[in-house]
Length: 395
Image 1 (cartoon, rainbow, N blue to C red):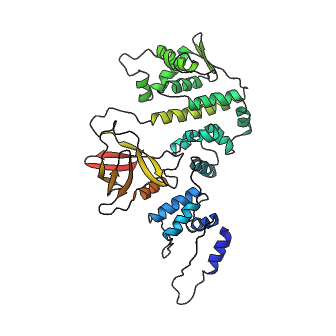
Image 2 (cartoon, rainbow, N blue to C red):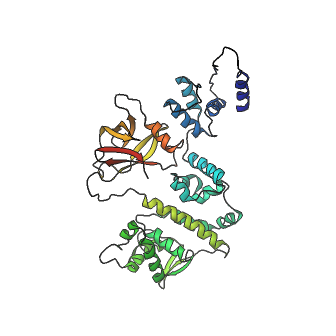
C-alpha cells in the first residue's frame, strides 16, 4: 500500500554525521501496486491518466523536484510501468474533469463549462446516451431531475436538442428563440418567433450571414423559417423530422407533457444543451475568404498516438494550400524551433541540430495531464506574424 511504502522509505530518512545525501534503491515488479511509487514521488492525483502523463513528462525531463533531489527510472522500468496502466478510454478524461470540477466549485459543470474547458461532452453519448445521462451517472441529479428524466418524452426531447444535425445554425437558433418565448414546450406564433430570431442573429455575425440578414436587401425571414428550420423539425423538408414538433395555424408547437413544477427545470436543461450546441457550431472550421494568403491561422486539434500528444490539421491541404511541408522554422514562447509538417499532422517539434521531440512537453505544459486524451478538445494554431510562423494555444 502507499502508506506502507512511505513508512518503509521514512525509516531510512535519518540525519547522520558525514552523510550529505541518501540514495534509495527500489525495484519495479509486474503488478499494479507498483504504480504507487511514481504516484507518491511525483505527488500525483489518483488515476492512471495522471501517471501516464507524469511518465511522459519525466521522459521529457520536465519534472522539477526539490533542490538536491533526483528520481531515476531506467528504460525497462518505465516500459513495465506503462504496460501496467489501463488503456485510456474516451470517458476517463471527462470523468476526472467532472470530479475535479465538483471538488473545486461545489457544483457540477454545465455542458458549456466542459466545452469551454476543452472537453467534448458529445463523446460521452456512446457510453451514457447523452450529456444528462453522464451527469446522472456521476451522481449529479437532484431528486427533481431524477423525476424529470424518468419521463420518456422529456428525456427524448432533450436528446433531440443534443443530437439534431446542424448543417447550418437554423434549427438551434429557432429552438433557442422558442425557448426564450416559453414555447419549448408550448406554442409560438410565427411573427413572435421571427422577431426573436432576428434579435438573436443580429448579435452574432455568423448567424446573421447564414440567415441572410446581411444581404441587400435582407432575406424574408418568416419565409426562410417556414421553408427551412421549421420544415426540417416537423418532417416536411428533408429528413424524418420529430414527433415533438408541429406547425399549424401559423404557430410552431412543441408538445410534451410536463407538470408546472417541471417546466423551469426542463427550460434550464434545454438552454444548457442549446448554449453548448451553438458554441460548438461557432467553433467549426470553416472555409473563409481571407484578405491575403496565409492571413488565417492554421488550426490544429490536439490528439495523440500511443499516448504521445501531437497535432492534426483541422482542414486538409485541399482547403489550406498554405500549410507548410517538411521541416519548417517556427516560433514557440519566443523561442525558435523546427516543426516537421507531414500530410495531415505535426508530430515532432525540435531544436535546430537536436532531434529530441519537444512537442509532447510543450503541449503538456499548455494543457495539462489530459492533453490529447479522448473526450478532450484542446486546440492550437499556427499563426503568421510577418515572416514568423508562431505555434500557440488557440484562443
